[in-house]
Amino acid sequence: MCGIVGAFLRGKPCLAALVRGLRVLEYRGYDSVGVGVLQAGELVVRRKAGRIEELERLLAADAGALDEVSVGIGHSRWATHGPPTDENAHPHCDWRGRIALVHNGIIENYQELRAELALRKIPLRSQTDTEVLAHWIGIELEGAGGDLAEAVRRALLRVRGYYAIAVLSGGERPQMVASREGPPLCLASTPEGAWLASDPLALIEHARDIVFLEDGDVAELAPGKLVVRGRDGALVARESVHVAWNAEAADRGGFAHFMLKEIHEQPDVVARGLFGRVDLERGDVTLPGEFFSDASLKQVTRVQISACGTALHAGLVARYLIEGLAGVPVDVDFASEFRYRQPVLVPGTLALGISQSGETADTLAALRLARSLGCRQLSFCNAVGSTMVRESEATLLLEAGPEIGVASTKAFVAMLVAATLFAVRLGRARARLTRAAASELLGELGRMRMNLERLLTREVVDKIRALAERHKDARGFLFLARGINYPIALEGALKLKEISYKHAEGYAAGEMKHGPIAMIDRDMTTVVIASRDSVASKVRSNIEQIRARGGPVICVGDDEESLAVSDERVVVPGLSPWLSPIANVVPLQLFAYHVALARGCDIDKPRNLAKSVTVE
Ligand code: M6R
Image 1 (cartoon, helix red, strand yellow):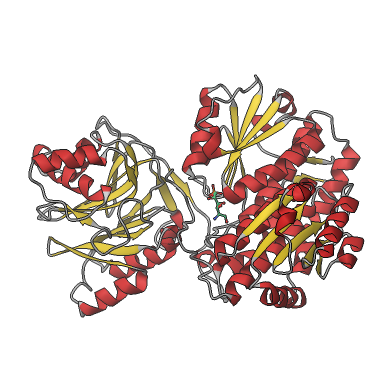
Image 2 (spheres, helix red, strand yellow; image 1 turned 120 degrees about the vertical axis):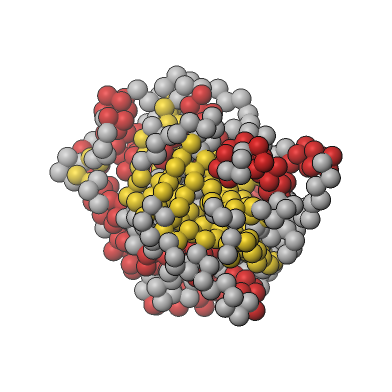
C-alpha cells in the first residue's frame, strides 16, 4: 500500500530522482511523504504529513543544502498503525540515528517487540510498527559488526508480518539494503547507480532490467553491485526481467486525470489483449504453453475464481463466460473470504486468480491456499514480474499497460477480454464450442476496439458529462442489471462510490422487488443496464416499476425498448450478449468520473484508498 524508493548514485545528486519516484508511486498511498538521505555520511530526514508538495516545501526550506546528496530512500504512506502525522511519517530512525528505514506492510508482532524495547529503555517517538523495526535493526548492528545487510537479516528473523523495506546507514561505509516478505520490491543496478522501488514503473527511467525480490531476500545495492542473500544468509541468484513499458505510460498524456486517460486507452487495450492470440480461421485462441493445450484443459472439472474489488467483478463475468461457452462449473469468491473458509475443492479444480497488480494480499493468499489443496493455478494479471505471475503455474497477461488511477478501468476491460479468450479456448478444448460459433464471437471481439471508440467520441462523452451534472446531487444511486451484465451493475456502483463518495449499490434487477424498491423516489437515481438478451423484457419491467414510483431512470445498453421507456439514455453499440459487458461498462466509468469531477473530488487519489492493497 505504501510506496518506497531508494537511489544510490555514483557521484550524482539523487534527491530529484527520489521525488520523481515518489510521485510515480503516490497512487499507493498519500497520507504522508518523506525522504532520508546521507549528507557527508550523516543521516538527514525530511518528512511530513500530506502529499508530495509538502515534502517539496520542506526541501525548498533547506535552500539547496541537500542538492548534492547522492544516496537516499523515500516513502509515501498509506497509514496502518498511527494516524497520518509528521511523527508517524517515514523514514524512521533508530534511537541513535545510525539507520533510517522506510516500510510498506505490517509488523504483526510489533507490540511484543515494543515491550522489549521498553525494557531496554529505548524511547519511541511514533505510534508506528515501523519505528520498532528501525530500533531493532539498530540493536542488531552491534552484533553484525556494523554491517547493515547482516543487521537487517538478523532483525527480520524476529519479525512476524509482511513487509518491503529499504534501509540506509551512513558513516564511512554507506549501505543501502532492501528486503521483502509479501509486498513487492524491485531493484536495478548499473555502473552509474542503483535504485529500488515498490513498482517497476518508478525504475524504468533509470533501468529496464529489473530484479524482483523474492520473499525472505535481503539485498544490498550500490552502483554496479546487487548482492542478494536468503533468510539463512546464503547467497541467492536472482535473474532480472526486462520491462518494456515506456516512461510516457506513467504520465497523464494531456488528460486531466489518469483515470480519464485510462478510460480512453480502452480501445487499444482490447486490441493489445487480442494481438497474436486469435485465430479466426480455426475459430480458436492461441495461448502459449502446455497449460492451455486441449489435453491439459480437458482435465479441468471446475474453476474456482478468487479476486477482490473490480477484479472480482471481472471474475463474476468470467463465470458466465466459462459456464456458458465451455460448460465448466465455476465458483467465484472474494479472495478475503475464500482464504479463511475451509473450501471443498473437487479434484480437477482450476484456481483462477484475477488481479491488476498481482500483489493483492488476499488474492495471493487465496491462490496459495488453492495450491496447497492440490489445485492447478492460473492468473489473469497485468503486472509482469509481480508475485502472482511468478507464483502461478500459468498466466494470461492482460497487456493493459500500467494503470495508475486508483479506480481501475482499463485493467477491468482487459480482464473481460482475457476471460473471453480463456472461455473460448476452454470451450474449444472440450469440444463444447463449435469452430463457427467461436470464430463469430472472436470476430466480434476483434471489432470491439471500433465499438469502444464509438463510445468515447466527444458527443457521447459530453452527453454523459451532462447526465452526471444533472444527477450528481441524487440522494443515492441504484445500478441494476441481469445475467452477464449483473457484475457490470456492481462495477458501475463501485466506480461511483470510490471516486465520488456518493452512496451507490449494484443489484441483480430481479432482486429489486425483494427490498431495494422501497428506496425508490425522485431523489434516488437508478442506472439500468439493458442489453438485448434473453432477459431484456424483464429488465424493461423493472424500468417501468421504478418510473411508476417516480424514480428517475438512466438506461445504458442496446435494448431499444428499454432505452425508449427510460428518462435518459446512453446507447451502446449492439453486441453479442457475451461481449456486451465490455462496452456497457465504459459509459458507467465515464458517469462515475464526471459525477466525481462535478463534485470536486480528487479523482486519481480518492480518500482512504490505495491502488495496490498489499495488506489485509
Ligand atoms: O490489483 P488488484 O486487481 O488485485 O486490485 C483489486 C482491488 O483492490 C481493486 O480492483 C480495487 O477494488 C479498485 N480500487 C477498484 O477500482
